[in-house]
Every structure is written in C-alpha cells, then in structure tokens.
Length: 191
Image (cartoon, rainbow, N blue to C red; front, side):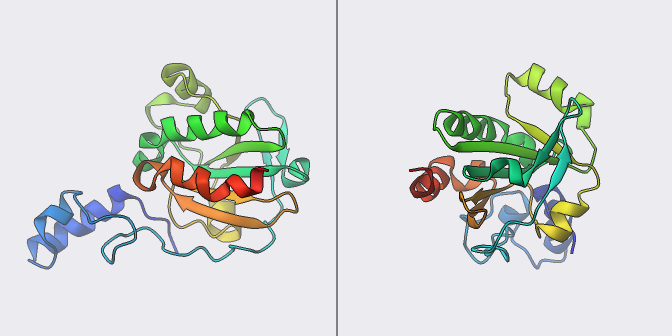
C-alpha cells in the first residue's frame, strides 16, 4: 500500500469532480473536518499499543539513531519528508513539538526523513537553515522501513513511544489535527 498525501488525492479528486462524483469544494482542498467520512487520512494505526519495531537509521553527520538509545524515555517519532507538501506545511508544528519535548526531562523527539528526496532544499540541513526549524533527524532513504515495518500510510505521522518501547499514541499532520491535541494526548506519558 502506498502512502497518500493531499497532493496525490488532489489529482484523483479532480478526475472524480470532472465526472460529477465529488463536489468541487472537496476537490479544491476544502474537505470536511478531520475524522469525517470524507477525510482521506488513516483513522486507525495498526501498531497502536504494540512494541515499537527496532530501528537503526543514519543521522545527518554519520551518527546512528537507534530505538534502544531511547529506552527509559518517551520518544516522539515523526515520519516526514521534504518531498511531501503536508510535511513541509507541518514543519513549524514539528519544530514546536520537538522544543516541547526538549523542555521535559525523559522526553525525546526524532524526525525520520523518508524517501531521500529533499525538494528545493537539497537536504534537511539546508531546510533547517532556511526556515529556522531544528530537531534531531535520521534518514529512511527508501521509505520502505516507514511503510513496511512501521506501517506509515500518511506523511507526516507522529508516534508517541512510551518508556517501555510501546507505541501509545499516533497522529497524522498536526497542522490539520492540532499540535495541542497531540500534546494533551501524550502528556500522561511524559510525567
């Protein structure tokens, strides 16, 4: 199953609108609220309340990012990509969430950039430099790990992994669904 973004859905909605199947407001991106029947984002996550699969990703400076390095901490894991318009639109929220995690002892944030495509920036560090955003990052070059092992179907997707390594919460793009709601949902894990 391939991951979807609003850009992918736009082409399909345009075709269906031309056939008279989809209202033009929906095709123009004015979809109903998150969680409604017309919302294309996943409504469930297959690995919720299961042990997080182990990972070992390279970082931007050759360092390794491994799940076991976060044992005993709450880990906010974000699967995203600069190739994805939804991830770019959500950049400020990811940055704020990473800052909030940094302020709490025992909480960490890791953004896993997928697909090895970096849009007009050519790389994550250039994106951070231009936007002023910053957070720890690692790379899933092919997106295969995100899709096949973590079963990520929408980018960006945020996961909260508890101190024992169990995925306790998930949310797709915070821009749409609310960073504050995700913080409230995960706050019990932080204390």
